[in-house]
Length: 225
Ligand code: TYD
Image (cartoon, rainbow, N blue to C red):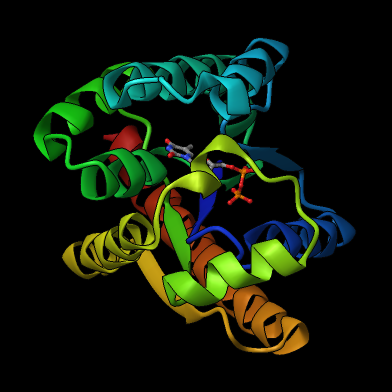
């Protein structure tokens, strides 16, 4: 029984720390956890990441950008995510297709329906079971990144208005699909946030295993017919 969880949020929201802590916790419980990130996660996808983040590539057009993200994603899905889910494992991804909708769609104003189509092709329709949005005001996120000594990438150079559109876009996506998304306040301190993340994931995993047990109970008598 595979389960696919993604973390989304503006730059500087603490996603990477939170997802790493969660992966460690779940692996400690004996679950087969695979932690990955976008763009990246495979040798080919990491090469695409380097292209996307290179400060020398400032002239990259938003359309080229989205195709590169999608190429990296297609490779990650087929090489890592699908095989792990098929083997019954748990995949945690630091960003996934919703980043494309938020950044290229809401941020750059590209047509959301087209982005959804490209994404469906790249992922062969693979969607997360649960998406956690670490929500943070754009200004706070950018300030955190500047202060944190994090590597400054090409995308950080976009202006504040861009990051504000991204944030609003995330909130819109979450509101449109409340059964998949959970919005968390990224200004909470690290441990409080991690406790909330763990509680939530435990609940979802429990619900999933109850559902699959119920499914197998039903399927037994049917298969005997
Ligand atoms: P990264 O250094 O991984 O930062 P973060 O810690 O914020 O995830 O940079 C990823 C950047 O790529 C981030 O600014 C968001 C952007 N991005 C897109 O614009 N579209 C996408 O589809 C993805 C996956 C990421």
